[in-house]
Each structure stands twice: as C-alpha cells, then as structure tokens.
Image 1 (spheres, rainbow, N blue to C red):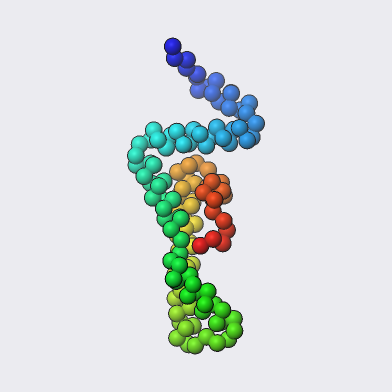
Image 2 (cartoon, one colour; image 1 turned 180 degrees about the horizontal axis):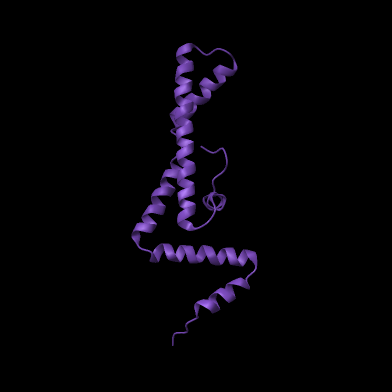
Length: 127
C-alpha cells in the first residue's frame, strides 16, 4: 500500500523542522532531484565540480610564487617582471572562472554561492 502526502502537507511538515533538519531535508531533495532530472543535470554538475577542483597548474603556481618572492626582494629582471604579469593575469582569469563555476553550481543546486562553497569544501584562497 502506497501512502501519498499532498504538497500542502509536505510544506506544512517541512516548516515544522528545525533549521538544521530543514537544511538536511533540502539537500536530500536536491540530491534526489539531481538523479531524477536526468543525466544532463548530473553531468553538468559533475563537469562543474571537475572544473572547480582542477586547480591552477602546479608548475605555474610555483613559478608565480618564486617570481613574487623575487619582486619582494627587488631582484626581478624586466623579463621576469613581464612573466610575472602574465602569470598574475592567468591566475586572475582562473580565479574569476572558478567563481563563475561555483555560482553556476549554486544555481543548479538552488542555494547561495557561500553554501555551495561550504558543500564542496572550498577554502578561500585555495588554488
């Protein structure tokens, strides 16, 4: 025997939950919807997660740190200065894209960007 709950009863029941239980309920509903909204939805979310977690290339990150240190020590050559400027621009583009991807993920999950960042364990300043 299948018992059905009406939409109004579901809303009424959900509003009785404490904040923590309500947030858990919403997460569970979103997770369930992700599997029932079809493979396109889940694939888009997976693609975004891969992009977000990819990180800035390690070799470029290490070079950026080295050149930044040299700039702090005032030992940067003109050629290195140009390379540093190029790396900084690349890192800024990467960071901007990462923010866009997080915002898009949040939109898919119908949550704030801050909530999405917390869900994926994104630490401010991580590369």
